[in-house]
Length: 246
Ligand SMILES: Nc1ncnc2c1ncn2[C@@H]1O[C@H](COP(=O)(O)OP(=O)(O)O)[C@@H](O)[C@H]1O
Ligand SMILES: Nc1ccn([C@H]2C[C@H](O)[C@@H](COP(=O)(O)OP(=O)(O)O)O2)c(=O)n1
Ligand SMILES: [Mg+2]
Image (cartoon, rainbow, N blue to C red; front, side, top):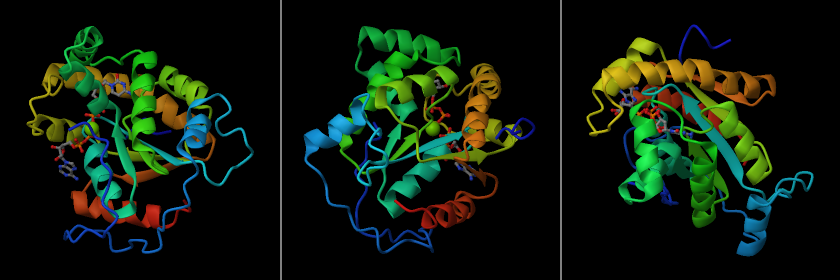
């Protein structure tokens, strides 16, 4: 369905105060009062055991938004804005993996080789990093940016966390625009070179689009046109997030 148009260690605790940036959301919700937090252990048990989410709709389970889109579609840029304006914790799977690489661990050596080749890191590694990051954030609204990248990721998350996301935001961006943005990203990333970018685009098409189609068939996908300026795109994002109940 989506096939023709490809589409710091980010555990920021977003400020609860409103952003004054010019790009700030015009539709910002002013009534995002924090829900009463249950004891930490209960929250963790719900999140990270197989019983998580099996309580038939416990209103206190965290709201989870997966944020997907091709490489360079603007996931990270938009997540930063959403976190600021809507009080979400922002967990970037890619940043978690790069943090593991920077730690110098043996696992990091494996990860860097995979990322250089534009392939997907084994789910057990990525899901464990996300699980720990969610635990550390203790947030009740979470953006998971760049995950799940493939069916294996999706199934591993649902098995370990025990539930599906509440929504899947899909930034739909043409391939040539994504390539242009990636080549201009200039963050010194080992995968932002044309050879790896071509492989990442193929992997997105073959492995990630099926995940988007899966969630689409379950009515979870909210597609956002990811062309235009970051601020223009954020206007559409704001409309979406302002309409959500979390
Ligand atoms: N709407 C946009 N127009 C032009 N450049 C953008 C836009 N959104 C993001 N960028 C830039 O494109 C690059 C990729 O954006 P990023 O948010 O990192 O995407 P992703 O996380 O999907 O790979 C970054 O350099 C970013 O500053
Ligand atoms: N769920 C994930 C997320 C990222 N990765 C790997 C493979 C990806 O090409 C790199 C970079 O991911 P990242 O989300 O930071 O990349 P983009 O923001 O889409 O440019 O990390 C992964 O293996 N599994
Ligand atoms: Mg990113």
